[in-house]
Length: 267
Ligand code: MLT
Image 1 (cartoon, protein in one colour):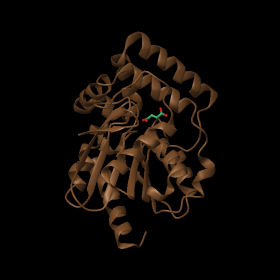
Image 2 (cartoon, helix red, strand yellow):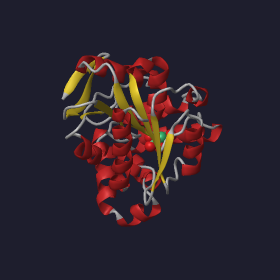
Image 3 (tube, rainbow, N blue to C red):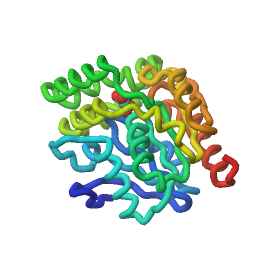
């Protein structure tokens, strides 16, 4: 489905009925990365997955992208869907956007799930690497980005043996336009440090980390979780950065147990 939000067509899926759960994908993927979670949740929850601007079936305008703009797109889509409050799940860049959305629209949050993400801003080296990656995208296209990203997104074992995941990720990444990939890189490069926000988060929060995540090491993610009042931290075994895709059984078990405790009011 598509909706006209902030002057672009934003693609999304809206499946099931029940308390709304909204999923924000990682860089440089799209909403199909959440297929295992949609399958596990949509018999009990209203599950909304979004192709952020610049990704998948959404428009990818050639212009400046910011985390604030991504957050405004999400809040605009929720208004369009008549959702006043939701549980949000964001992985990596999806988490960066949720920090921004929490800062600008805290009233939208019923609960929060952060996976394989970090609150800190980019270091000078990381910022320089964004610039280099943007040049690769511009010169050699999305397929070159897919080859660069696979070893960051998957655990070493999955990168070697899971041809299904590698093929799926190549298809997702090469389906994105260069304008969107470069836009993401600029938005992430200039993101502010969200660490001061952590102690102000007052909704139930679950933090997940793939045990073999090379992009956001689990020790760092756990350190972030400790700064969020009352947050629960769970390590996902046998999973790299895309912990929801590599070990959906463990990811979904942690997510469902958290959602159930939130609905019961004991989280
Ligand atoms: C992601 O998975 O969204 C990226 O690893 C985020 C980043 O590059 O900082």
